[in-house]
Length: 166
Length: 194
Image 1 (cartoon, each protein chain N blue to C red):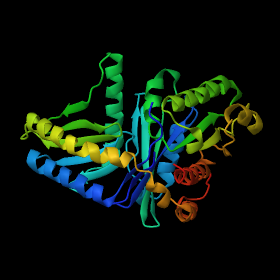
Image 2: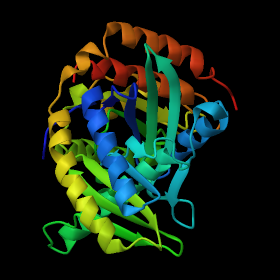
Image 3: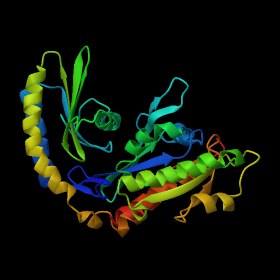
Image 4: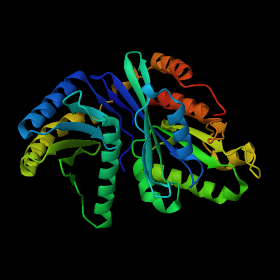
């Protein structure tokens, strides 16, 4: 298994990523596009302030995708690299970008699945090298430094309520 | 694996509550959900059986607010404790930053605690995780019950990393926030050494 790796996304990378997502949303006519990590954390969405619970969506999509990969192993298939949920009004398409990144796209019945699959595949080709670079970044020591740790510690003490007998 | 999004000025940490079936992992999360400021928490998502036993995971996102210009979030997960759900436990551990091992203090649950503890280390090793990179807390739950092990005995068995040990009664909330604060501080301290 791969060792522990950080994921640090800088401004330039994020501009490029957001540009790809916005274009993907436009050309596919989809409702919502999101990038999340395979551990269930949201990265970004298009449109940026979508009316969706992205935190829950990220956790559930990552869980669903992880289970699908295990299903592939059980069935002795090398990989199931995409996941598709068909609903009455909308559909969800999940595709793997890298070992750590998933691309989510939701679209209505008026959008053709083939169109979504074609353009999503092209978007993944552009996004893959960007995230591979971000996954190899180890510049987080400058961000999560001693000052950050101290301030966060104070915030944690102040923020969570004190012990209670319920 | 803490996710740092410099463009969005955001940092996310993943904390997993681990332990044997019925040790109180979901009870911890439910207590936190009830008591924390609603503006600072997201939806509590539970994938459970009809008997309300965890089938896959519970998930609760918490926002600490902005620290040094970075919006800081903790994503809390539980795993299903029952032994036959190991495939699910392994998946939930992916990308973990901190672990709370919730032990059931009752004498009768000793074997289940030890099995679950060994299973945790097996699964972390399979993910290639170095425990020294993780925040780890041992919570000794159900301290209000009779016929329980001493803190020293349980620590000997379930704490070879010499992590902080916190006594708790998750049903009434005793020790729940102390556990959460401790593991949150640990994951932040450890993330600067990724």
